[in-house]
Length: 162
Image 1 (tube, rainbow, N blue to C red):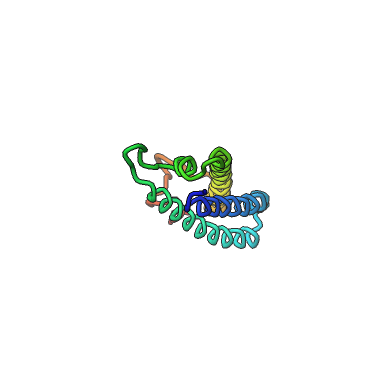
Image 2: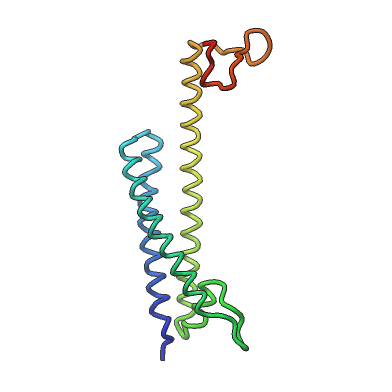
């Protein structure tokens, strides 16, 4: 006889897997769009990512709810992860469920790594734009940072001396 929460765990894992697959597909489209500065495509991807983040937040809430269903007993400690839950409700399917959970974790790490790469690309573009604005503001000349002729303003973008 299967545990009453087994189908709920399987459903949660299926939803995590499909949401992560969608996220990876979006990220595969996002990196070239960032590199090519395709703002329209980046904005469309950002809207889709917002939707995915909402779904992921719901999944994390479901995950927490599921883990809380298994408090400590006289024979078992409190469940603190989905692996604990899988081992309790999975029966013979437990090891396969643990493998799926591990794949979800690895995919999550891949998504985090790709997000960091996208952040670095965006920051590089931001700094390049800032440098370009500085060059335009000072008519191609590098202003002195210290001493005579240094700007007296508080911010680089609002240099009234330029």
